[in-house]
Length: 402
Image 1 (cartoon, rainbow, N blue to C red):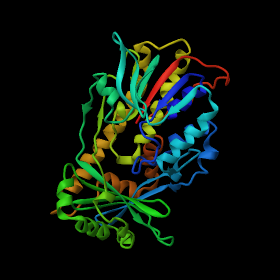
Image 2 (cartoon, rainbow, N blue to C red):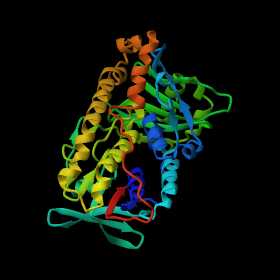
Image 3 (cartoon, rainbow, N blue to C red):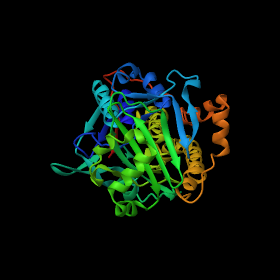
Image 4 (cartoon, rainbow, N blue to C red):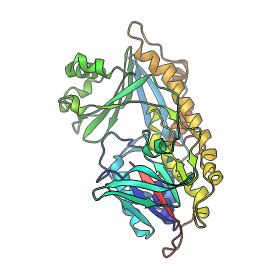
């Protein structure tokens, strides 16, 4: 949706496909980091965006086997927006769609699921999409796959991924929150258990971390055993946990980290989770996808005025974004292996606060370092693509969304 907005703004005729009738999906990435807020500012959208309901987080505190720790302090950053905004992703997507209505060259097509590719020899020339009216052919000079970690477009193009692996999966659920309830603890780690909590105004959004592949074992213990563990870790949830009435209220996120060695075919480019699935560590996935979109528009918008860019031109997106992706995934793997894996498999022994966490907690000036990595990432992108006069249109691009 962000790339559709940027290319529509540049006068490129662009069609965004969304397979659902609306954007309403719970437990998608809701963390909007300063890097994305800066992009919204550069596009002149920030004032309206921040009027949408959201919560703000600056200080990330935790309990590590009962020991208070501070993970990061975003207030130490020299950035215009030194906070993480928690906003439902459907609000973000709807906001971009509404903001993009002023571009005659941008169209969003709902209930249209890309199921196969159109080929002319070795070149991808669009997609076949399943719609309420049946299968339709949508031809495009360039098809861009943004259809997530289980990308159909990527699979149909024969592009593989390198699996890096993760030691955990995550159970997402909501617990009710009373207006007078306050809690500053963001993360809780105990032997064999780990949980993250976000204050979402009228509810707590919770992520209960389990060892990879253990969901069926958790279910076998029963819902009450899970909820008892949750309340023991976070007593503030005692009243609100009644909102979780069955396992239907618990969403399993199967964690994966992977990336593609090749992001392109002639006429096709993959970005976002379709090119590199991120761990939920740091909540950076949405923001990496936005960064990919900005880089893609920066590199390709002008070239699209003259037809489909060459595959080498398309590959410039990978060359630009691969280093930030690799570095971010490397940091996620370190956290997974050094902290999360040890905690989840440490049932029989007390946990030791990692040295780096002890240093960050003891030396406040260090708290800006993880804050910067979380907030701005590695080599953040800025909007350089130009806005075209509203009357101009150029070549067609198909953006494929989930």
